[in-house]
Amino acid sequence: MDIQVLGSLAVTENGISVTPTAPKPRQVLALLALHADRVVPVARLIEELWGDEPPRSARTTLQTYVLQLRDLITAALRHAPDGAPARSAKDVLVTTPGGYLLRTFGGTGDVQEFERLAGTGYRSMDAGDHPRASQQLREALALWTGPALADVHAGPQLEVEIRRLEETRLCALDQRIEADLRLGRHRELLGELTVLVSRYRTHETLHGQLMLALHRSGRRSEALDVYHRLRTTLVRELGLEPSAGLRRLQLQILMAASERPLDPTGTADHKRLTRVG
Image 1: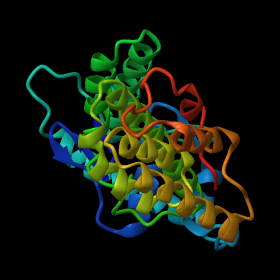
Image 2: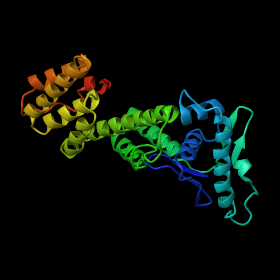
Image 3: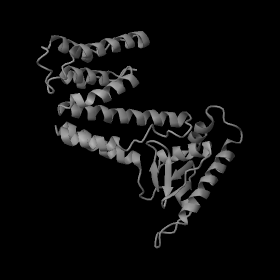
Image 4: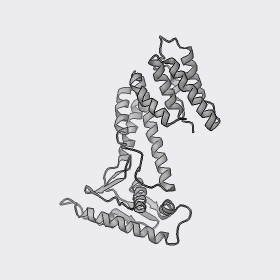
């Protein structure tokens, strides 16, 4: 079974889609797919579908959705290649004493591949191999075709999972941009970072990276403007001042001679910036 959630939900068996069109069965499949090869308790599935006020028929209705998913799986299993192990839909979508389990039987998953590639990128960063880190993290981020589960109505359980996935994406993005800055690609990053800071208006790391890229491009006043806009937003919306690391970066830019951009290896402060908000 192949699972894609980094964008639209797509679950296939033998190349045949088993993704339902009805909203609630899609929620069930999405939660099972995110926890593939692990048991998802019935209580979690019910909370996802109905929140804190499930109907009396919640368990029976959930069983109906599981049967609908098994019907789709059964149709896909008919397309198994010759010589493949015989399986039934109940072997793939398993009922356990406490819940349900979606078995992949060694199939692919974009989340797992993303985590693998991002992990290799982080290790390359730690080793100081910035060209390799940039490439590996680009490959990881290319697996994202849109927001996670973009076409699935998210209940409380999926909302938590989507936020978690978004944080992992932002972490990989931050490190990829860091690698590119260390490779001297500051001008190439300006357009991307400008879009990102407008989307993530209180994300200090991205703002610090844009400040650095602007300064190294000879645009010191614009770099300082980025800091002042962020500070205004943080104070007005969150009642917070920028972090000490970002304030030190602002001071470095103020003190630096315009003809000497900051050394890409001499700004460890901005690597320690953390997201606010």
